[in-house]
Length: 128
Image (cartoon, rainbow, N blue to C red; front, side, top):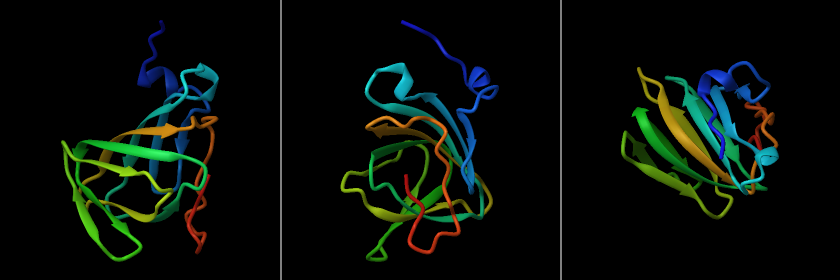
């Protein structure tokens, strides 16, 4: 067993500015538990085209608001208590709220190394 604080992660390379927000990679591949756990902030007013080609992701909203849009144009508002799952390596748009950040607990499988960063300006979607 071990305990790790978000404050501890901020002092490491596992606190990542990913382009439209921040990600505290609380659990990573090196922890050996088979998944990654992140505290993710999507800044208000941002939009990111993302595509996790090598990972499945589930996100649970714990604060703020935002939205996720699939490639067919279906938009889902995300608010505290909502979860979304990218179970088919779904390409998607992730947006922070108009005036508030979207705050998520994110789980990745397989686990991230922990220092990955997005290339938000990539027209074909940022990926890792």
